[in-house]
Length: 196
Ligand SMILES: [Zn+2]
Image 1 (spheres, rainbow, N blue to C red):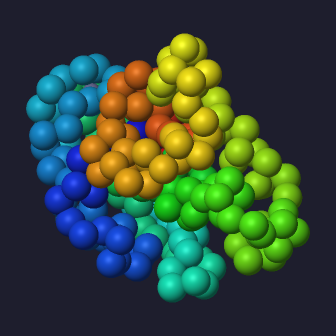
Image 2: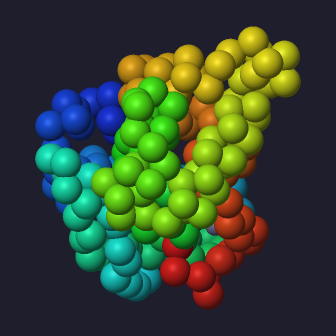
């Protein structure tokens, strides 16, 4: 999988709908500047290999919106491995966008909504909410390190993500964790038999 980072800092992304943001970010990714995650070639000759549909759920203007998007899979001509190309706000193997998950967690930690009210608002089961909360707390510890994690509340870290982290630091987390924020499914190697 190839991730496009440092895209959100270049646009006023909060004004975009989920669907528009996906295609805007895709148009900004310079695939030929992306290294191959398998063979490490810094500037491989990428060729389009396939496209597949995928769901992307956003929370646009207060409404849950389920979009169907087309993801492009590229082949590295150096090692013949294939990789889906995803912008940073799409969580690999998850339908809900990163903004959606953060909006839910913001309401969970910072609003007075009950869990049932929150789940009704975002049309998710409580189990999904709690799995996102667990992933958030786990990734917070990875990102901050054990000591700083203890010293930083969930609310403070969420505030950091929403104010500055999204624009500048998602690539930093990826470099530390070798996966994306909230990504729980990990595919090593080629991954050509998985959708993302
Ligand atoms: Zn390669």
